[in-house]
Image (cartoon, rainbow, N blue to C red):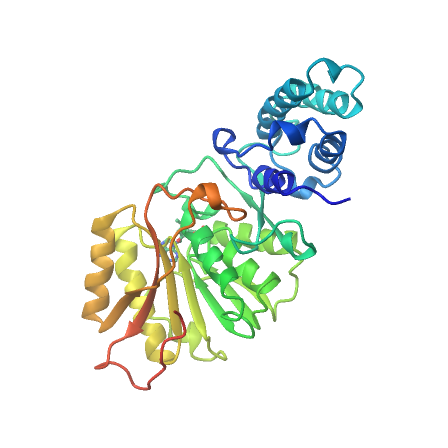
Length: 350
Ligand SMILES: C[S@@+](CC[C@H](N)C(=O)[O-])C[C@H]1O[C@@H](n2cnc3c(N)ncnc32)[C@H](O)[C@@H]1O
């Protein structure tokens, strides 16, 4: 059965647990069709695949609105509608669950991202590249446990990387401050990276990241591993013995003044050890004063920043990897300046 694009768009938003108020719902003319209702009932609102299913409380809220929209679209022929009955039954069973009995609680949500370019057609075989990570959705920016969810900076960087399909292909990747591991998992699972080392300073975050690797059936350590790496200038033992990296990635990791100085030290040490390495960071301009600290630190270490020409896709045009654009997001390449450069590596990104 061919599935209409608005239904696939709805599925992607639902599985990514997009805020109910920002969902782009399928139009009424589509919702009144039995095939569309059957797709929603059988493929979205059942628990046949609990590892990629959103939390019960979220599902119930979305389902309640959806049922109201379907009922409105079919009007008087709503009676004896099997799909609508099934959906209503599902809603009733979700509502009767206490939050703890639900498939997953709000603090421990399975969030599934569709790793395709923003402008892809949704109705092709290649248009469904799911990646599920367990996240704590209630976290706010600047909180102590920022690593337990995927942030807008990661989604912006992911959008860029999937749009440049050969950037990561065959490359060896080091990710700093990887959090839930979304970017690293995507590089290993869908973008053909030869090797990925996803790192974070927080050992609980690294533990959860390992769980996310398994959730995505990434069990081969040669391909991807999650390791603890606290930013510092002294990375010698961590990187000098290994085969090195082609690309260093980081998303939403410039947000704390003290940590930012350590981050610059880390980048400086990475360039010392691997002069040819390419560094790409995605930054959310939440804290301009912290970004200033970053730039000053870079200048002191003879590193310069270059903004990549890649704009945020407006939410109304996003078809995958949904994120809010209310805060400016930029992808920044860090390069050694001429004085520091030992070899001419050239720019990989454009
Ligand atoms: C805002 S989160 C971003 C997570 C992920 N990159 C994303 O965008 O979804 C920042 C991450 O940086 C890590 N981090 C903060 N300070 C660090 C440090 N000094 N060394 C290593 N990791 C650090 C945190 O543990 C957290 O996982």
